[in-house]
Image (cartoon, rainbow, N blue to C red; front, side):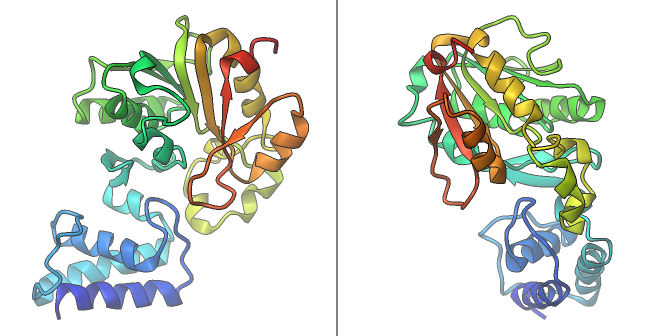
Length: 287
């Protein structure tokens, strides 16, 4: 059996098993390729030789990992200990939300046309989790100092591990801070992918998401407890020309209706209901 045939077989098994995706991949083929390549000790790249002939041991190894994905419903990122975000590899760990965010496009585009990249000298990432947003921001804004905050010990440990993985210790600082609690600087850009799922809907999430810590999703009754706190305090932590960019997912309509005084700019991400907004410091000063 060739590598391509093995991946195809795995994808078919996953499709009929009704798995959910969204942890670095959005379809059965990509996720199968990730699992199979990892099981073979091959890099997860588009340059993989699909004509490679697999021996019986390699085939058994690949099938075992795929069956584990199907049986446990754990995200592939937890099973293989790594995933990709904004074109960068990140270590993963159970107990910390899998790296992902619709903020990736904004970061990869260096914030254009909404901010001037050369004017970004300090960046703050609230609810940093694995550190993926903070690290991606550091790569897109190489002249900026980046702070990432979180209060979860496991997340802080993993974020620092990922900072070290990318040799960014001189540029990225991970802080044990409840949002702005231990933040003293003013920032040109504040980024955040906070919990924004209404508490009552958490149990409706697919099994894959149930393997992640509920605190990473639980945004309170309407999903916006932390979102409002971040917005309300952002003005005092932004520079004069600074901007706040945040993901709120499906809660975007609730947020917009609850804050009619704010001129939200909803950014295109290519994904429906991604709920990524931008607000400038001038719009937040009076809050």
